Amino acid sequence: MIKKVKIKKFDGKNFYDVYDYVAVEETYNIFINRELVKNLSLSPSFLNEFGVGFAINEGFLNRIDKVEVDKNSIYIFGEKNKNEKNKKREKPKINIETIKKIISYKIEAKYWKITGSFHWASLFNLNGERIIFVEDIGRHNAVDKVIGYAVLNNYNLNGLILHYSGRIPYEIVKKAVNSGLSAIISKSPPTNKAIELAEKNDILLIGFARNGKFNIYSGRLWEE
View 1 (tube, rainbow, N blue to C red):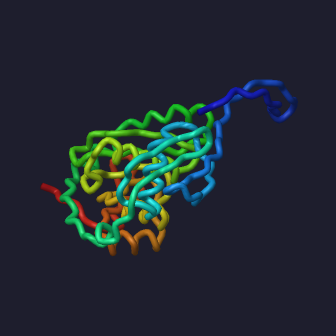
View 2: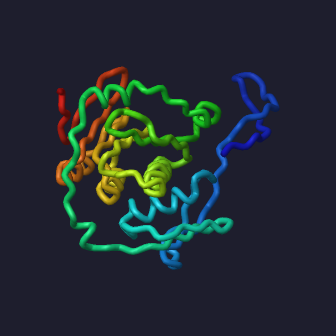
């Protein structure tokens, strides 16, 4: 995940030889049913989870049969059922206390603290209990990894809430739509296109979630 390198540091007056830690970046070929669909750079962890999450979140598949990693290639096998994609699921009621609990959760982003080069993503259940936390050099990658983890561990995605470190663009909401997530929380705001897509698909969208405060851009909370 990280690597120690020798660098020259300038303090405003002089140069010094010092060691620093940088993020490790690897490039992977992504195959869906043996067809190359993408070449992506990501952190070398949770690769099976990434493959599954990417295939579902990008709309390639909605049923996963198998995932394999061979050096710098990730192979995902499965099917895309068009009827499944069009099936509307009733969103669960999310309590305001659950959101308050999630945004008060202490974030242990150790690789970001060391390098400043990582994003993070996590999934919570409707009781505000954390299921998985992942760091990656890319925020989209981190989201794919946590959703892939949930799929591989047979969680009901409709009952999960995404909390992650980046702003909320259209592409992130699209991942939630394709996977079936109910809510997205971030310390940063969404874009207008993200809000429109969230409203269309009844996804709770929360931004500026900091210090016990937040803004709701789409959806509603239950106070009881």
